[in-house]
Length: 315
Picture 1 (cartoon, one colour):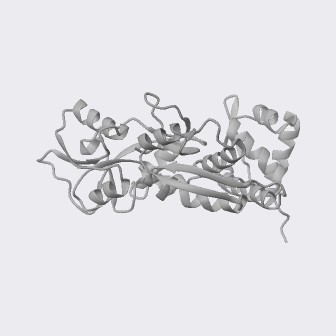
Picture 2: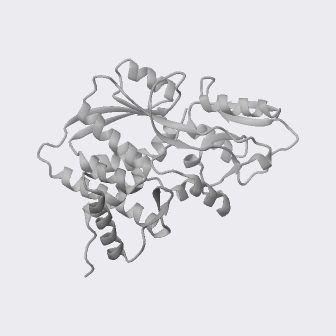
Picture 3: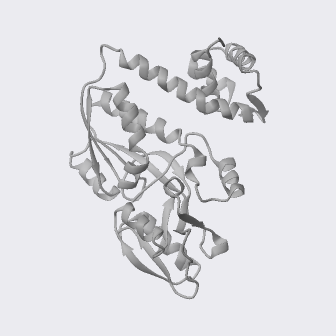
């Protein structure tokens, strides 16, 4: 039977990736730099592959190191969940969390599943609304935590993911070239809508708002039916959708960000625990899953530009 991987070595390995160097990782895991180097030598011996290569003053992962990273995060997460499950002082109570419906559809199943295993005595009350209304409900004390589209002009939130915003159309219906672009977008206060119309105005392309809704499900249905073009973050692009590029006459859009808002006075232990689960879930999303309709070369380019620990957005 093969010897198991060492959790402590894996934690140090992940710290090196997250902090970009052996020196900064050593400070984070409370070890000397020589001890960190020794741990990585032993981990490489155990794996039988080189995990890091020098990159200026720092280090970067080899292909084999990148392969191990996903496993390492999952092993550490499962280890922490197992320890928490037997903690006699485990958390109890209830939390009210808000999220737009597209985030709920894409992220909440994994977040809820993992959180429930780690904290089975905590009840989650989940509200699905647009980011503007969620921010207001949190302000009124009706929510404890909200996952929203970060918008520094209108609300303060902790950015937990940055992601490309894409033009999308049906992959199974031709896009009309001799008429104004039919758009399916959010309400007038939707920042994605604002980005989309300003971008089209900037290149002088005609458009008309065909569908308006705060529901991402409604907008996606209009796109899949071939009735309209919309804008979505990469992770929300579905099978049956085609990503439109400048070659199709659609300008590149500014990236979008997901933010996390917490109600002042909310139970700190509960909100911290759930926040950590949310951040970990978003951080571990497979980039390959985020690009179902992108051609392989473009998907590879996106992967090369992606940065660990960054995150996404909604209305």
